[in-house]
Length: 276
Image (cartoon, rainbow, N blue to C red; front, side):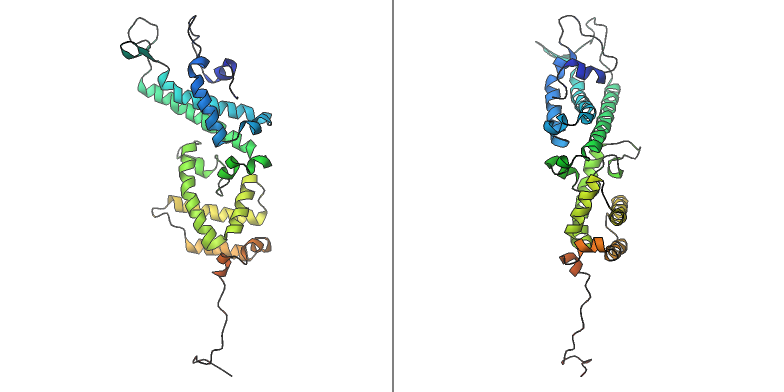
């Protein structure tokens, strides 16, 4: 486990008040949420066997798990169940503290989400260096588009903050665009190669030039009211493919390339332009 005792958790709880003698610790209170967060991180990022073999991964992964658990548990930490129903700690019974306002609670949760998403971004930067991860279920999921970086344009909000929710929402739209790009313009084999090299950060210069054009056009389409790709821009991308032999090797011979093949002349006796 990434968080197995209170010492792993407490660095992520600022201004924590020590529990009274006999009261359960913060770790004990949110242990079920920690288990859920561990499963969430393993599904989203990497299984424990990969994390355990990469010491540089443990710090961002631990922060992602801790902040995810605290984000979910925070609204319930001041709630108690009494014989007469649900109450809040410090709600006029003489205790020293009263519950925070909804505004401050939501602000705290938003801060936890921001820390979580930055930690996820840092973990991804390390994971992308691992060949075994890139072919895992999690790696293939992050490499399913030409935008495998959470800190890139898909994952940035209007305020410039990293947001996992924003990334996941935009990535679904991009996947639809890339399906169209692969079928109609780039070809499936070349698109798969570009995605794999983008995930591993090993794009050649011609691949980088082509990927840059495709990314720019998809980002433009995301911002446009109709969300449609521009054919003129994609025609120029095809010209770039045809001008480079390393790109052509994955493009020519595909059904996509056949769409751009000019029909050959046939000297038909029945045609008005027939010549001997």
